[in-house]
Image (tube, rainbow, N blue to C red; front, side):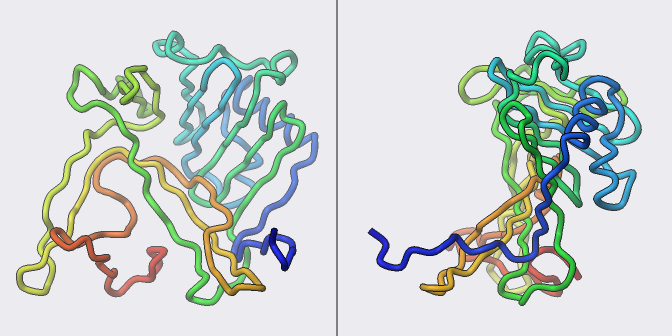
Length: 255
């Protein structure tokens, strides 16, 4: 038993606000009914940037991408047979486990049954350097080769990949098979692993335990999907696995 019970520390550098019922209804209508940009997400940051959708349902998953004005979702042709059925907000909220609508600057999360929702953004001000948010890239795994993973035709990037389990998944991003090469470092004889693939990007926020002083990741939000060269650090030295520190940039990629 913990001899020093206390509330979990708040993450630093992130602002999380609860959404009203009206805003939750608006998000569902924009994304699942009208197929237009999510206005609540645009209102939280610079409007016009790319938006993505990840909806986990009791009977499957719906993914989507909205780079401009209109959504392309996995429940539409030609990928509807690989996706959960479309969501009707008037009758299907019981199917929803979680809905994430996100972009580089903000994330909206609707909880189970859409009974509650939140929007998270960077908080104003600059945290201490050792508590600054960190951007990470998570590799999306799939079998390599055009017979297993392929980018679909259309104005909005979409792909179908066969996952390690053998099932097929629809991803709202162009597909790039994973590969790596050695990138020489300035120091003679040293090289870093430079990876290419298909990535989910995440921003992590830290918190410090007031009792022990321990620091760890306490909150994260999704920031996008990308294809090609790994969009964020960290990088590791080939042979030793040592962390390669970025030069001239902070750990979150900002100049």
